[in-house]
Each structure stands twice: as structure tokens, then as C-alpha cells.
Image (cartoon, rainbow, N blue to C red; front, side, top):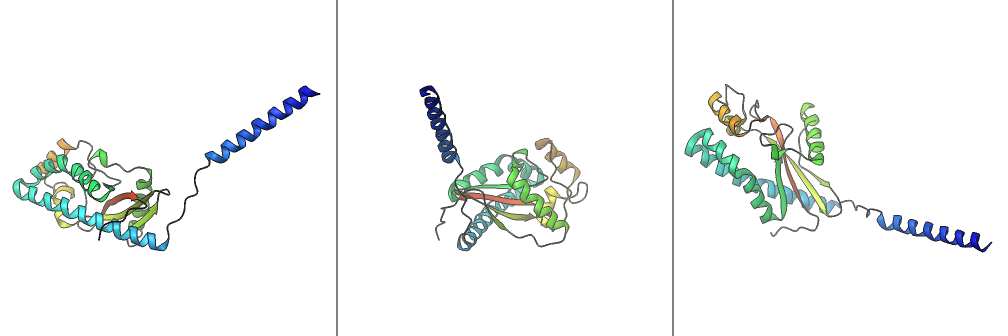
Length: 206
């Protein structure tokens, strides 16, 4: 009888311990963004994307004027990612450009970015407006996405091969990016997105 009681006690104690562990291991509840937070992060994301674009495009145009597409492509190959990393440090954010058709393999989208890209692709195919958006990743991380569209200046490196993108320039691009897919675009085409991730508690200085 005592053995049975002891066994029952040990069994119940073990069960209680397992239940307690399961309670402790539950993921914390994700708190949805408030309207105020969504508006603030949308504004911050746009500010970061616009500032990054201004720096990158300014330096790219300078490189283009200095040595044409070949020189600009080599400059981009060496400087684009470091510029994004540098500005990420300035803003306390993770800044990326990504696409379903990347040039640099390091710009390939992660799962969340791919999902956003696929939704933008559907909206673009349906001729719906592409708008910036804010997504809550977890309680600590907010993702901002904004569409990237091709303008006339971009076509020298991302246009149709043999037309706006010269064959000899494309050969240079392929030597730098053997798996390049980011060509064949026309002025106004949707190409990818800005991806900005930052801490939920981030407040940019005004």
C-alpha cells in the first residue's frame, strides 16, 4: 500500500513539474501595434529608405559620370552593402534592398521579405497601387517594406540587354555577378523592396 502511495506521489509530482515547465516555455504574447505605433514606424521607415536611397543614388551617379556603367558596376559591387551597413548603424536599423530577381546573392530575401515581395508582385500584376507597409515581426522587432521602382537612370544597369543596357556593359555586370537576374526592366517597372527592421522602442531624433 505504501509503495503504491509513494508511486502515486512521485507520478503527480513529475506531472506537476512538466506542466510548470510547459507554462514557462510558452512564447510571450505578441502585442499588436497601436495605430500610433504603426504611423510612427511608417514615417521612420520612409525616412530611412529615402535617406539611404539619396546616399546610394548620389554616389552611383558620381561613379557613372566618372567612368560609365562599367565603373559604376564595380563601385556598386564593392560599396553598396557597406553603405547600407553604415547607415544601418546610423539609424539603429537593419537596412536592405531585396527582390525576387536579385543581382547580388547577398540580397536574397528571407522568408518574411519573400512573403512581402510575393504580395507586392500580386498587387503589381493586378495593377493595384504598391504602398509602404509596416509588419510586426515579434514584440521587439518591426519591419518596414516599401516598393522599389525602376526609373530611367536605372535602365543603364537594369534595362533590356542590347537596348537600354549595352551588351558590353552587361558582360561587365555578369563578370561581377555571374547569377544576375536583375535585368529586363522598363522605366516605371516594380523591381523589389526596401526592407528596414528596427527595434520596436526606437525613436528617431527629430
